Amino acid sequence: MSKVFTLAEVSQHNTNKDCWLIIDGKVYDVTKFLDDHPGGDEVLVTATGKDATDDFEDVGHSTTAKAMLDEYYVGDIDSSTISTKTSYVPPKQVQQNQDAPSGFIIKLLQFLVPLIILGLAVGSRFYTKSSDDK
Image (cartoon, rainbow, N blue to C red):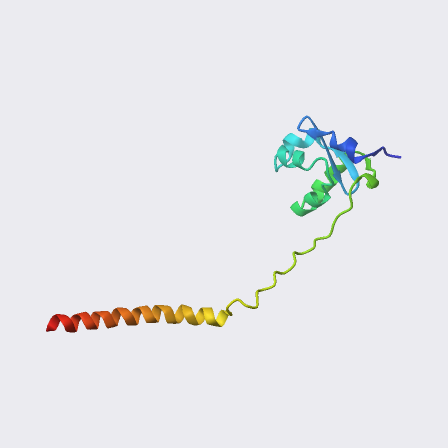
């Protein structure tokens, strides 16, 4: 039977001189592997003190990398000491203010305002040109 560790016990091993990880309910002492890790030692050290299963799986490790874990196995984690995973809850949609102008009005204004400005410019040019001719 393997040794069972609590999260508090595993969390104490959180430096590049003493680094333990929790992956799939098992505890691994990866201190000797830190220098050889392709992603660098900082990646492993930042994954300490929590369940690093998602971090490990998200990277997409090879079957060889997964097989290497056996070499660093030191025991199991007491699952009652790890907080349960919370599911993602999307934020509530912000309701639009019904008094706000609709998209149609905004688009209409975006078309009409430059057209009015252009008309004023052409009109003032026409007016000033006809005044100069007199």
